Length: 132
Image (cartoon, rainbow, N blue to C red; front, side, top):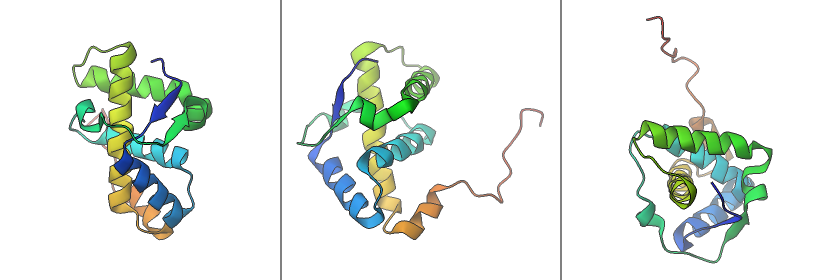
């Protein structure tokens, strides 16, 4: 996946600004959280849904930091699971769609700092194991 910076739609850019104001969390961290939420959502986001561009851009090193290889591996695995054989620009478009959808998911769930706890897994819920 080769890109230098990600450009956001006007709507998602506005949501990132509002979320930063509500929580104090920087947009790059909000994008990382959103991406992880989107990857866990079963449906496949449509990259064409986010094809318009706004003014906000975030450079790749700021967006992904030292976790860049992890995010690349996650999007490749998700695309593989979805039956999408994508590389290069197509892979980036799916990554961008997951980031955008994820920011929208975070925006719906987080109105203030205490709402961040709703993004965490329920400790009472026991995950299924492969042995069962």
